[in-house]
Image (cartoon, rainbow, N blue to C red; front, side):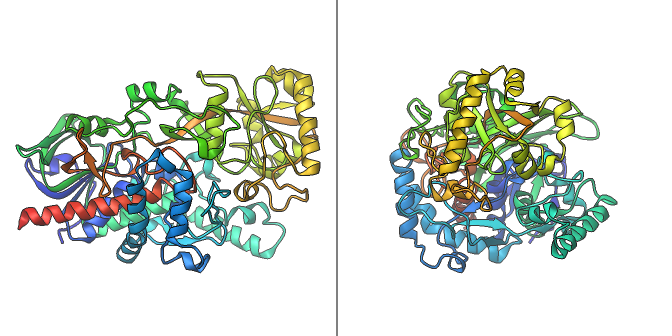
Length: 602
């Protein structure tokens, strides 16, 4: 094994230097591919265009959906791959190649076992973590969604700073991460000795961290996943380059991708550096998808770039290089979004992206915070979403993807009509609102900069939001009646297992997602449909090999993660359905590329 070479300048590499496997993109899928190839003894180069590793994965929950792993029986011994296949057949259907879904299911357990046994990436599984489309045949309440174990970032030493930080608004106390296990203790520290002790340990650890680091080193969720993968890369001798762009892929006379050109800027002198490298096994594309590619975004989405909370490196340039090398784009026909907010989830046409409602706020340094509203507020009691007419138009408890699609269907032309998430004093105290945390922590500054709008009465709030006061009051009166009965006849809020899980299990009413909005003052935050990941990408076979116009694999060129056409066909059936396939197809791509490199050696 060659010595570790973590984050050298590009100039440290020689022209024509040879690697077995090169991975473009250091998000979850790309780093996993690099680790898999290194486990097999390959000489691996991992190239990242930004200054950090991690991509969107680093700022996500890190949930990884893989059915049939050895962890599943801990919480759901009755689940089978046949049930998972039934679920995906109903959820995805003909929107994506069934052979790729079958490859995902067939190899998922082996992929998780290999990386768990031979790297620092370790998972746990929750006793309750339901599939999003829990009403479909084959759905489960647990057993398929894996979470990375927390990680001590201090183990990375001087390379801790390479890990992309979480979205600042998801941290507390200027850089401390908190997860679902911490939040009840943080909110109830004064109610029990257990919570007080837990919070005291967190604060002491964070205070110690801040004496030596710019943020906390107790990494959770997606940050933990990336930290664990980075340590694995470091120990297995993966060469990691940051701030480096791929400029070209090279095919030889036989059509094999056998090299690439990279470029960067020398940090000391500011001069450009270019290297042409050789690749024996293959190049694996994992650059994060097209979301920030100007032309593809305009053609496929039409929404502003600053509605996207994804990683900044998802510019799609690797996709352009792949197409120049003969690879083909994933969907051949026009892409349509959901046509009706009431349309069943299983009737969705193909969507080019996965979606979530987001709110936006300008930070003190002038940057824009884009905050995804996943589960903490919109589906809870005392919450309602209305349009510019003060009317409800969607199911607030549905998955964030379906929520975003419903917003797009209701307001198809950006920027569309305003969409407002509204709560009252009870909702603000219990659940917070977007970037304002429960008990109103951070509310004063949010009111001062206009992120949150407050009204002393419903009429006052309506006037400030330019909504018809009578209509808004009627909407709230109607919601109060629905909360009393526990039934939402308009949109079916809180009718499935997953939707009820998004509510408040401690709510005393008949439906954990329905509660009245009646106690002043009232608050609102504006929502936008934000794209959280690409569903369209390069066409591949079941080994993640890119396909040309004739449907034939391009030797030595692979696509995984969001660079690969989603095996979910633009449907979001469960938590972690980007990271799960990203992991499994990274395993398949790396294995194939390593075999090619050994064949070339022989």
